[in-house]
Amino acid sequence: MKAIQHYYPDEWAQCFGCGRLNERGHHIESYWEGNEAVARFTPRPYHVAIPGFVNGGILASLVDCHATGTAAAAAYRAEGREMGTLPAHRFVTASLRVDYLKPTPLGPELLVRGRVRTATARKSVIEVTISAGDAETVRGEVVCVEVPESMRSRPT
Amino acid sequence: MKAIQHYYPDEWAQCFGCGRLNERGHHIESYWEGNEAVARFTPRPYHVAIPGFVNGGILASLVDCHATGTAAAAAYRAEGREMGTLPAHRFVTASLRVDYLKPTPLGPELLVRGRVRTATARKSVIEVTISAGDAETVRGEVVCVEVPESMRSRPT
Picture 1 (cartoon, rainbow over the protein chains, first blue to last red):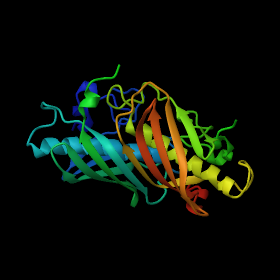
Picture 2: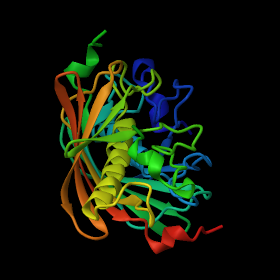
Picture 3: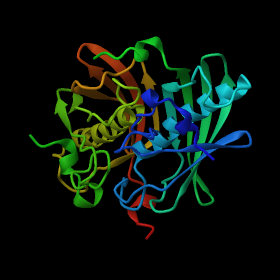
Picture 4: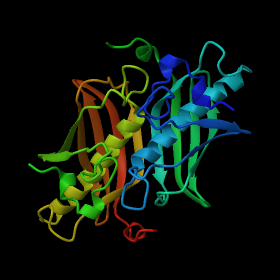
């Protein structure tokens, strides 16, 4: 099965968080499982915060890129279209809220779950949780919007 | 002048976002300028989101680590103590909100400003803005708490 982010067109697959074409990036990959999108990610030892625990910025990145991927995949579903068909859906983040419920241990694989809370034509609110083993350690809410015109024409 | 994060004890200076001892990290460094803490950060080319713009996870990391640094430095100030004196202050993030007001161009140095909104003995709310040139592109609010006991004893 191909990750949601692997359906992004090349131009939109450079992202440091989830771009398959970013050689230095985190390569976050999300998949549908029923009505949820799920990503599995094992932080590297250098993704540390306080020793023993995962850095909050990495967790925010997981919430962020998993949410925009969930929003894109849900947009195809809502239209009854296969991912990869044109025109492509690609969402970016308008706002992000992350609650660190408890410290996230560094070491185990993390399970990231995303679910659509609301969706309109160009805007979705995605709820995300991150778990380490049985412990839910992070909850996030992300407002995602389709790539705006201002980002479609590169400034350079 | 020494960055706020460079006063963190070695044990707490490993952070992927701001740890001076993390060889793979972002090395975010914050300094007092009057009543604000200020960080300057030039994202690398691979910190891209959509081509031409900075990845939201990197921006969230800037908000995150700059806020916890601001909170630590403000805690010393509130006690009339020099940074680096013991016991050390070190804050972590309880919750993070980031509003991406407009796309942040990739290339120029970013200016990150932090200001204490409220502070009690072990908890601070820090407001952060990020600007690229004259444009304010990001606003954040971070609830920071002193490193909890649960993070002082490593799980391994």
